[in-house]
Amino acid sequence: MNEQQTTPNAAGPNVGGERCVCNEVFQHFEKLFEVSPAVRQHLANSRIEFLKAVRAAIDQRIERLSHTGQQGSRIPVE
Image (cartoon, rainbow, N blue to C red; front, side, top):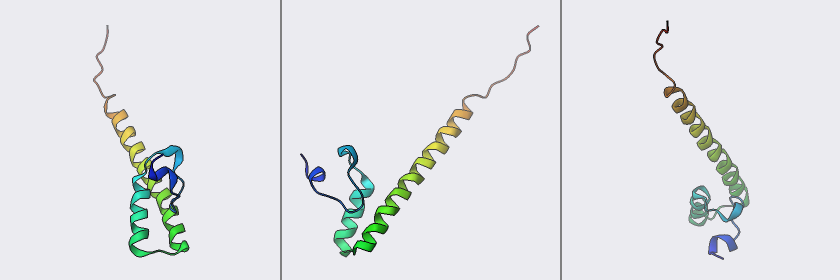
């Protein structure tokens, strides 16, 4: 097992052993500022909101790309 899978993190659980950039940033922040449990909880909540924002941005981009490929011209058929 690698270190990330064996050490608990305060910003949220490591789901499926996958690496999370948000979590790594928050861990560095916590070490740098020696944050309290209350701040740690705020960081965990903000990580979830950040990921939701990324998901919304991806959904918007998919929607935009889906509509641009469907434009064309109509040709009347006799």
